[in-house]
Amino acid sequence: MTIAETETAGATSSSPEIMLSVNGIEASYGAVQVLRDLSLEVPKGEVVVVLGANGAGKTTTLRAICNMVTCSGSVTLEGHEIGKSNTADIVNRGVAHVPQGRGTFPELSVKDNLYVGAYTRGDKDGVEDDIDRWFTKYPVLGERKDQTAGSLSGGEQQMLAVSRALMSRPKVLLLDEPSLGLAPIIIEDLFQTFKSINEEEGTTMLVVEQNANLALDIANKGYVLEAGEIVLEGNAKDLQNDPAVQEAYLGG
Amino acid sequence: MDLFIQRLFDGLFNGAIYASLALALVTIYRSTGLLNFAQAELATFSAYVGLVLAGGSMGASFGGLAGTGLLDGLPGYPFSVPVAVLLATIFGMVAGALLEVVIFRGLERGSPLALVNVTIGLLIVLSGLTTQFWGGAARIFPQLFPADFDDFVWIGGARLRYTTIGSWATLLVVLVVITLLMNRTKAGLAFRAITSNRESARLMGIPVGRTLMLGWAVAGGLGALAACLTASVVSFSPFTMLGALIYALAAATLGGLDSPKGAIVGGIIVAQAQTMIPGYLGLPTELAVVAAVIVLVVVLLFKPSGLFGTVRVERV
Image 1: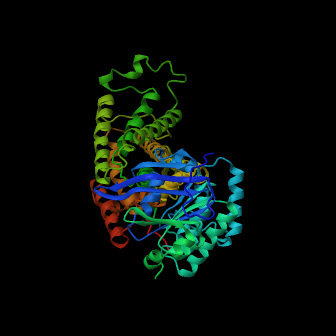
Image 2: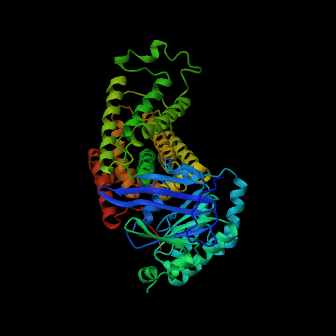
Image 3: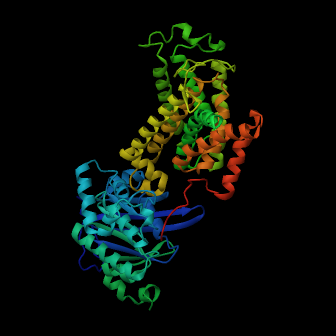
């Protein structure tokens, strides 16, 4: 176990153990630099949120962690470098990624979607138990287990995508704009679900969002990303009260 | 009426061939977005490998591999026709998987058009190899099912040939095996996931290249089997399957390029059009392909994505 030397920069309840650490990554699409010397840390068991407008580089940050885009710099999981591993390896080591737009398999049944989520696991019985567990917890998925995922509503698909990601029993869950395209009331439910997953399962989460208020409500720590650079970081409550953040992301 | 049933039966054999080849094309297309024009040539090459394994000779340029004693050491050689066909099918599967590993995995980021050109290149290479090894002339292959003049049963006043029954029985068994493979195994699940959403499949930790090999193997095996069935009924040359490929492409398009069910139904319809339309309109058989194309155009006019092609159901 690595006990990282954290500068407890203003954080009130920081745990010293770092689950995921991104150190100085840079990424470009052609001539356009999307991420500049970006660093962030996700402590074990916490929810960390990255706020930013469209095009700030939020999605690219998550894709860089899973090595879905070429980037320089280092990414470590529990102190071990994973930046050079391929995506399948990174998933195997415990990083689950819910992509923007949910990324369910529309032609596959709800149940098969969950089986695919458990692809990296070898324990058949454990997989069945987990599927039963999510079906009990989210009965709407259980009721529709044989329907195709494409027939679910947006909110149901997001729950499916999250359950599917959790099927790999990840150490850290990456959520890419889970609120995108959902009705406000559903978004509120969804974030409460994230919070309870974090509390009950102890799953570490890194969420990128535009919906700053709800995200900060459930987060321990936040970063603000602008044009590929971290311009502000701090604990979630402080960010919620920060005038600059309020003006830019919380509707003044 | 008897004539109608006879024409129906006559089209059934070709239907099995077109359906197999179309299913091979569709398997690759829906998982990779690629139309593999080399499908028929790979099938042809596999059928000739089967011929050699059954004790047939190579062409003049090799002085007859069978006569050299090179294969005499193989236990069981020369193999019975069913075993030779099975081995040729396995050869087709391995060759298909190798194509994925050696050629297409490295070209994953290439444009679809460039990749289609690669398959046309492969078609030329494989065709050249087959002609070089076995000569360009048509030859008689050993019969898999009894295919002599009087090998048929009377049904409804029409003759249903054993080869037609045997070919459909074989195809149905193969379809059951493929369905079980795709729906009951972890590799099959991974393959369906890649077909549905490749990027998400990668994010679930699925090794995409290794899993796509499965599709290439299935396609290679299906093609090889179709070629072996064809070769055991008609005199077979390196170019016979190329003709079948044109009908199979029409069948796959007709069914909807991404639908396995569509490939089977499309294969049956195209083959029936090929016998029925010239039969009833009194067209010369040389124009049969025109009949198939007319059916294709008419269907696509009304259903642009084919009979069973997916118009994705997705609520957001």
